[in-house]
Image 1: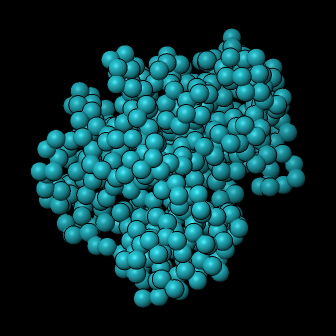
Image 2: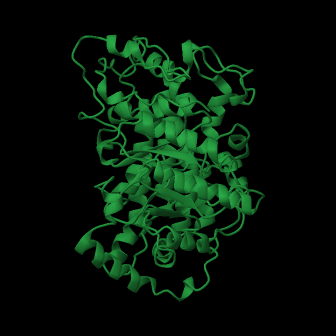
Image 3: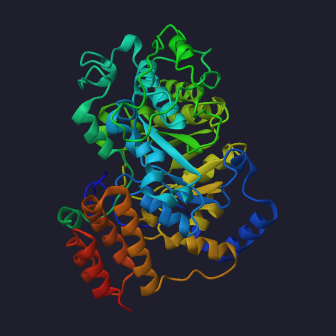
Length: 502
C-alpha cells in the first residue's frame, strides 16, 4: 500500500489540477446536459461496445489497501457503474496456494453472497515480464480453471521459475515453483494507488507468447472446489518456449466434460487492466508499473503478450501516467505506448495526469488530458488525477473531453460521491450524507469486510476507512481518533453508538 503523508514527501493535500479556465465551467448545467444525452443516446459507444453495463462516465479506481470487494460493493450500492481491483502482482497470481485468493471470484462469492453486485469488474495486473503477465492475465479470466501448474508452465519455459541470475528479475531470487516468496508478497501489498492519509494517523492505526496459441480452442479440466486440500489442478503442460512452441499437453488434459470455459457462464472479469502507471519506488526498481514509461518497447511487449493470451472477446485496457518525467524523450515514450496500445487492440487507456516522477506531489495537468483528447479524438480516453469531489468529475469531462473519469482518493470513505454524481446527471443538486446515512454505511461496510477478511483483519483495515469516513462528521478529529482504537466489531459499534447516534 502506498502510505504517504498529506504534507510529506510523497503526496500533497487535495488541490485543483492545472486547468486554466476550468473554474468558469458551469458544472451543474454541464452535468444536467450530459445526463440528458446519456438518457437519450447512452454512454460513449466505443466504451459500451466493450463494457455494456457501464452506464455513467465515472468509476472507482484500483486503490491498494482499500479497494477490496467490501469497498467496491459499497460504491456499487451508491451508484458506481464500474470498479477496478487493486493492482495484483502477476508472480503472486501464478505462485499457487493463497497467492491467487485476491483474484478468486468464487471465493469472493462464497464469502459474500451479494458479491454478484460487484460487476462489471476490471482485474488490474502489474509485473515485469511478458510471459508472466500473459499467463497471469489468462489465469484471472479463466479463474484458474486449468490448475496452477499449467499457468506456471506457460510463464516459465521447461518448468523453470525466474532465477537470481536472470536480469529480468532485478536480482530477486525465487523458488522453483515460480513464486518469489516473501519479497513479492511484500510487493503485492505495496502495489499501488494513491493514499493521502496523514502518516501520523496511519502510524497509529521480455519474451512473446506464441502467435498461433488460442486459449479458447482448448477444453479445460474441471476445477477443484475452493480451498480444498488439493491444488487447483494437477494437469501438467509443456511450456511456452521463447521460440513460440504451443502448449501441447493441454490437449491431453482431463477427458471429463469441462465445467468451466473462457466463453461459458460463471464469474470472471469484464476486462484485464495492465498497470503501467504505479509510481512506487519499489515497483519502479523491479521494472513494474510506471517504470515502463522509460522503456516503451518493453511496455509494448507486455501489452502484446497480454492481448494475445486473453481471449479475443475479453477487452484489455491499460493504466498509464502522462510520462515518466517532463523531458521531451519521456513525452515521446508516452505517445509510443499510448498509440501502440490501441493498435494492439486495447479498448481504452486510463491516463493519470501526473508523471511517475511526481508520484502524488503537486497538481496534475488536465491541460495534458485536454490536448491528448483533442489530438486523438478517435480513441476513448479515461482521465485520472485531482478528482476530489463530485464537481471535479464533471469539470474534468467538460474541460478535457475524456470519455470517463477514474475516481481514486476522492472516493475513499466517500461512496456518496457516486450517488451525488447520479443526482447531478438527473439535474438535481448533490446532497451530503446525514449522520444516520453515515452510520448505516459504516455498519454495512464493516460487516462486508468481516465476511471477506475475518473480524481481526477487518478491524485493522477499517481503522483507516474510519479515518476517511470521519471527514463527513461535524466533529471530524475526535471521530478520527475514535476509529483509531477500533480492533473488532464491538469497538466499531461503540464508535457508531457514541458518534453516530443521531
